[in-house]
Length: 102
Image (cartoon, rainbow, N blue to C red; front, side):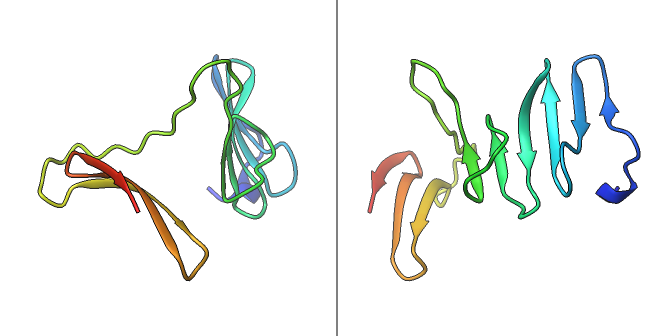
């Protein structure tokens, strides 16, 4: 349903989908904002103000992981992150169970 047609937030006992400001959608669980999509289409997880296309934040005194998972065992199965400036590319990931980076 288009945001302009939402007349009241979706709510349950533990979850809430709402619009905290114009052209912004958020998901709240256990009274805390978990996911925000701003008017530019930027997505924030763990923060309400995305500073990039995808902004993931977890403040803790421990390791924080972002998981990409491919359970296919085929010869071409892979999970990579790609970093690019539009001309140059760098990849970090796993190709068929072997880790590496270029």
